[in-house]
Image 1 (cartoon, helix red, strand yellow):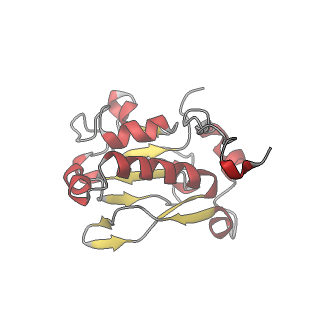
Image 2: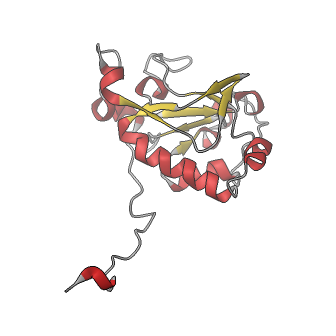
Length: 178
């Protein structure tokens, strides 16, 4: 069949069908590789541009450093947020999604010995000041656009963790439970 007429186009992709299944935290070493190995960072991470300007304090940030296995998913999340915000920088600023607090950080989890999800470059923090670690009071809620879009893409939100461990600034491409 001649495709010049456009008669046999594929149906649009189902966004749920492309949603990745992230590894359990305990399986991240096997899935993402060992970030303590020489050259791991260069071989396994990429820079993802955000559709809106980000900043850490007063310092502009041009990209998010993320594991290459998470990059396409992160692009979809950021674009979905930007589209849902009407591509309005005013809306993004009002929601405080321009306040970025980091991704990759080679360290162990707070209070533990296991590597942090930040060490695998599969975790991102936004607006730490308004979403403090272990606080029951935070700006991001289950119905917040940023939370909804990350969860739709299969990411885990730290705001869903047990009351003593809430981390509402945090999103990760690793499951806590099976």
